[in-house]
Length: 330
Image 1 (cartoon, one colour):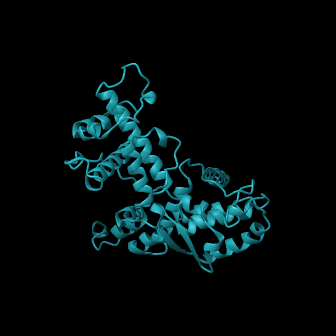
Image 2 (tube, helix red, strand yellow):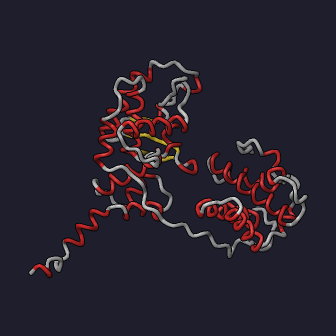
Image 3 (tube, rainbow, N blue to C red):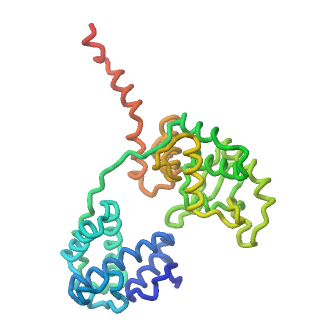
């Protein structure tokens, strides 16, 4: 079995480690998801030890060891203890509703594994566990004019201009996730298609429009001249250190170019450029919601439906077209 890529795996309880290995190798969860599972369950088990007074009251929370948690300990976990943990994350750790919802989902998934796969518990205490309500927010995105301004304002004298222009073009036209963009392989680009590994290690084909094809074609002569280690030679985007560009570098360059365009909203991250691509396709390209779901690689269409709520201009125009709109002016 593959050991989860985390520095804490040797301090995990056996059942937790088995769950992480199962989630990684069988369910194909990404490294970031496995890391999040590990963090959330470690927090949960530390809280339970403290809550049950199994450790000294003055022991630092982060110093609570959990490697010795066994099946008997797990079998005694109750729904009320889980709610107590969620209350702790809210009041003591100031976790947002989103963070608490993530922890709830992790715990539910863990107990489902314990009850249906390894069968060490007769009754799943999370069956009636409710998830914290999350206020739905409309996605933050650039308008069409702002998107054009962003691309046109980039400093063409900058040494990384062509690379960065290609990165922003792919974000704004294809709606790629940050993790998908940094892992693009040259061998996976075929004419007007690009194959990426998306969320949950699922492969999907991304179709490239003329702007993307042109941006990649302009960048490739520069990219081909960069010598790098054999294991990195197939990565499309490299850093100035001749290694695959990392997520943080992309976040920094996006922020730099957004500010350079005079768009100072701190929320304009790579993910917001993904929102921009989706919004522009929905508003201006008239892409239907099912097609947009496929383009973005959403597992559920409910995730994609946030883009049906962003077109306030269309809603305003729809109301104006009501045949009774001018009745009071007669």
